[in-house]
Length: 401
Image: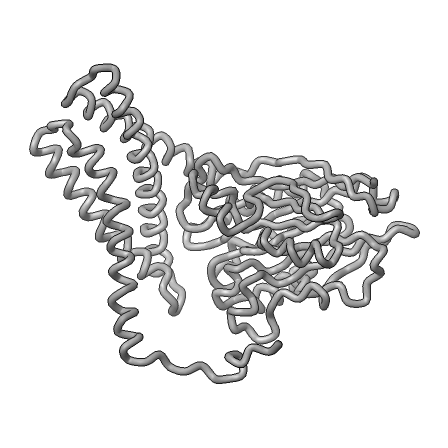
């Protein structure tokens, strides 16, 4: 059934609705930021520690400055508008602050367990609160440093064997390498991109797949960081599908760019690999957000991607989000590969991701035939940290059933 709303031109928001939005959005942002900063400040600076007035003044001032800087820099760095170095600089500040305050908030909340344990042990204030304060600061600093190292390092290689019953014997041992969620953005990672390419080429993939979210920004702005993708090699196929971040405005541009550097952009279409009498279909669909993005001609369409294929031939499907697995099951796809989740990126976001996606990472089974491999991703989005969610280059070795 056709949605009647799609047949009508967009109507401008009423003045009252726009006014409410201008009030509600800043209020929500202010409230969230207040909570994120209040708990760490209370835990470290106050909460019975009885630090001297100088410590309290400095601690409160630092928290207040960061509290004001976070929404300002996030808005300036990520708002719609022309790209430029100034905008990227704002984004870098906002992303770092967002990551730091999230780590600080989580471990300040968990420090309540330490406080309770010390209370049971008979440790009184101010010693109890000072132990909690110093411990919290130490954990946050260590996790921030380690998390940044994990985000910026060359991703680890993760090997997984996937048995596919319908796979022909000539494809037994086919090596599929996944690179996804590179998110080239405000922080220049050209050197990292070259290291990633070297690591992928060392694996000698048969099929190389980029499963979306190449970059945050236009081809022109991120061309240098993405350039090493042209040098990534595969013996049989290099394939790419869009992620949700491409639909912030640059989807078709990235599809065209990947074609221009020798990749197959699977914009709701497929390619077929042949080895003797055996065949393997590699299909790709647009991201789940494509239809609602307004990009002309975009929207996940698996029937279109598989049009004209032999139903008895096994199918490897590229779909950015794990929750697109429902369509894959209905279509009898053998293996879907996805990214998007980043494995949560900064713990415990994995629990929140699980509310939206059926799988956070790894190999899972769905229906009678379909399997899903979800990569943690090779890069990161926004905050340059990965805490208990390491990046990966995924190597899937397909085994004939």
